[in-house]
Image (tube, rainbow, N blue to C red; front, side):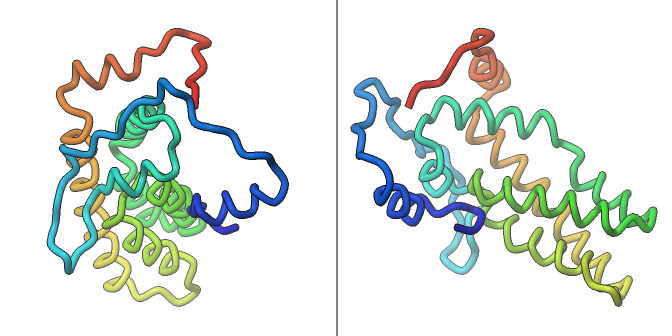
Length: 173
C-alpha cells in the first residue's frame, strides 16, 4: 500500500486479517462547513472531507493540523534556502516529507506541486529557471495552504483549545 494510504484499500487488506469493530458511539461528527471551496478545474487548497477519510477522530485531526501549522510555517522558505545553498538532497528529503503530510492532511493543491518539486530536486540535470519557477509556485501554494488551515481551524483561541489536550491523554476512535 503506497502513501498516502487509501483507507478503502487499507480496510480491504485489514479485513483479511482482522475482525471488524464498530465505531465509538461518542465519535465527533465531521464539520466541513468552513472548508475552502474552489472551481472544478482546480483541486481545493485544503479538502477536509478527503483528509478526514484518513483520520477516525476529528479532534485528533484538528490538533495535529494545528501542530503542523505551528511547526512548519517557514517550510517553503526552508526548502528554498536549502536549494539556494545547493543542498538538493536535503531539500528533496524535506519535500518528500511534506508530500506525505500533504496527502494525509488533504492539502490537495499542494500535493501535486510538492510532488513535482521533489522530482525536480531529485533530477541530476536541473535547469535553474525551471527549478525557481517550481519553487515560486510551491511557495505561493504553501502560503495559501497555511491560510486555508487557519480558516478551517478558526480563531487562534479555538486553535489553542484544540492543542491543549491533557498530558498523556489518548484520543479514542
